[in-house]
Length: 224
Image (cartoon, rainbow, N blue to C red):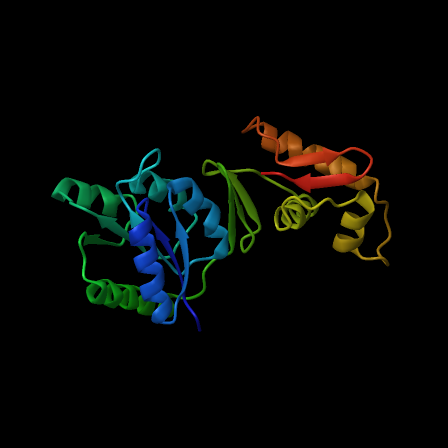
């Protein structure tokens, strides 16, 4: 099994160092230069996250707070310095470990291996997608906005799943219906428009952002 690591740091030399080192160790490494990029890359399903604390705009603590209720993999904070108060706060919001810069790559590698061994014993991880504040848990078949669940019917979730997993791709009503129900299923593809309307209404109670866009005369696409 090839483990996946997400390395988040605003310093390009550190990102390159982490990527090159862990690639040589046999890991698949994704890198992010800031918190927003890190959240987008969570859909890759990392087995462990190396997360720099001191980043502009969104620091490592804020990233951890945003994702921890949905992401179970270990999070190791990377920091130039850490006071006891910061260490406690980081652990309280869901961090698993700290490594202080400048760090030994051998020590970091040992910690990564130790956390992954523990995760291997704990079972499987969930498949997720983050779209701004909207979180889709494909494993649990649930949708949350800022940790508040949006109740969707089975068909509504099926539509969200299909569109969000093919972001930017346009699906006609007929294609959505055929994909989800099959050619032999009795029914009418015109019902898809009503399902999409209800999805928008339900998400609209939490956010003004448009996630399912209408391409007039063609169909629908996910733009979250």
